[in-house]
Length: 374
Image (cartoon, rainbow, N blue to C red; front, side, top):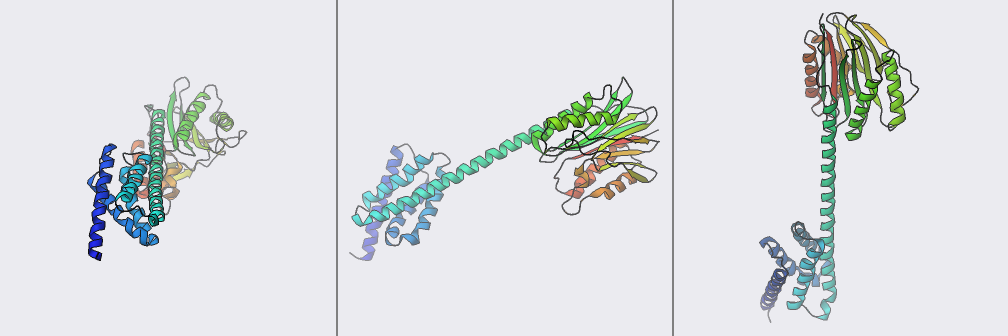
């Protein structure tokens, strides 16, 4: 028999094997797509070469089966894919093109490569599914954290003659725990102001915002001073919250009648008061909260006058930027240059300028602005 005749006979036997495989797959209820049918045909044609030089052809066998498995595993279980594309394929090949004793080793190797390709494809798909579910879970958690943040922010801002207040919070994709508040206490006439920047991300940090809100708010009643409220709040946070979560926070009492503002700054950098083309830093008067339950906090008292602007900002403002950080100087220059604007306009301008500068937001951006209008 000539080489041409031998090839035609081999091709004929492969066609028989391929048809037999298609029939068996259909009987088991798994009709094949044209694409997979062509790939199985290519796989069967690789078997004679595997007999001659297995090391040279095994990568081609693996790649062909991996392509089959990538499609088949979308609708079938791993054991079903093994049965269809290993067991039935090898049986069909042996029925029409094999059966000799010297083919035993080649058949075993051929079958093992198919098994490895399907198993690895199944494992890769499982890892992909797990990563997708994890990402979906994280996304759901972040959405929940954002809802918590929005729910805790003030629904309205008190309208007090002679003063304007504006708060803003722009959450990052990965949610942290920024929070701001302005509240008028009718029983005393005092306006409490606070801005908190909680370390950490996700639901845990956003939930801690609620603790900061309600603990500090609860201690206002009967407190002798703003520093007393902060010391009690810090004691509870240190005792009851995870040690790795810390809270930077500025807290103030404003007396609208006297225009006196008492401020306590627990480790927040971006706190200053501006008037007459200059700004005065309001440096920390105590450590961040949640670290030392016996920490003491002092107060800074400001006598405000018409045109003054008091600014609270989170670290997400000064630390914004892919290269050089936005920084305190840019922030102060921006506020001073626009101190003639309304408090809401100043707050909006700061957020927009920082967002434009940073390009990519990595942290929450929050601010609280107080302006004395006269």
